[in-house]
Image (cartoon, rainbow, N blue to C red):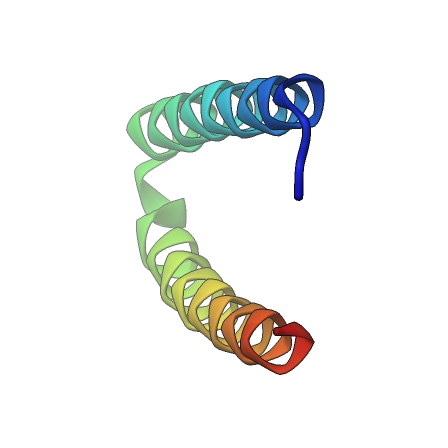
Amino acid sequence: MPTPVLFALALLVVLLLFLVGILFLAGVAYLAYRHPRLEKPLGLAAAVATVLVAAVAAVAAVAVLAAR
């Protein structure tokens, strides 16, 4: 059973990942705004990243269920 300290640490890590993700998305948006010819490659990269995140989430869900 996780302790409150571990729960708080996990929550902090999730918050930091969220903030870094927001900063990364802002950087990509700025790059696409300043260099319009990069919009299509950035869109493709975003689509691939979305599929990758979905695959990692599915594997993590299976790992959590298997650990029970």
